[in-house]
Image 1 (spheres, rainbow, N blue to C red):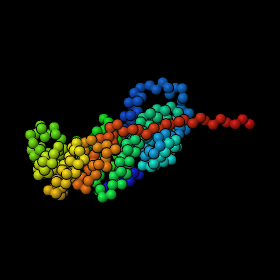
Image 2: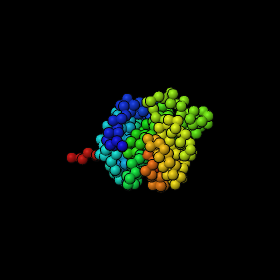
Image 3: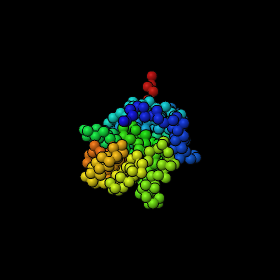
Image 4: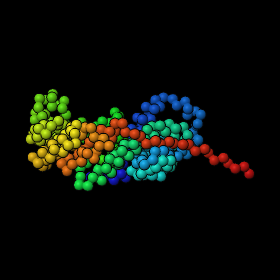
Length: 298
């Protein structure tokens, strides 16, 4: 089940927004801002324009947090999760000129990246919804930009796909290297379960139906069928579901927006795609300071 886009922002603690905004601003201006001397602190207005057609707006809490931190205000014309088109007035930012320009790039980076991910997620979710009879979830992965994961995971929420696990602490996923290091799937599952107990699910990456069967028998909650061709996936998922009806089956590896439909199956519960964050196009926004009105002479 997906969360309404307008409620996604309620998941972000205010102190987290403040911390991130301060970090981004400090990265971009670690000491002096020489260009600030030529614009000063006169009050200005800037218009945020979306320049990419068929986009989904995401990242407004981060955009607003950056400008709040430098003493500016943001009035949104469109709300989080809404569809926006090319050359669309999206928001108006007001504040001291030098402060507005201090926040411009950091704020735009967040909005462009988050909106790009949300747009792709929305497209994938639409494809899933069009597949009648499939009641599973499209999901992201942990293949995120270092230091920017919260923004990217949040964008998945806005785009109505599952975020998958947040980090290594959120859920146990035993991949091929875990199994190789521990000796067997059974041993890896048992040792992981002894630590995480009842409060965390255990998922195992498997390369065959036999490995999936071993993982399920050992107590795994989720089996990831990794890098299966679609037809092989359908057969393996069917076999595992017949033997372990409560088992969740995830398909991952090699799935793209173009071939997603080939992976839909009544026996597959989750389809995860790394391309939700890796190689995802951004949405192009620009922030244009408006020229002050020239007073009329009387």
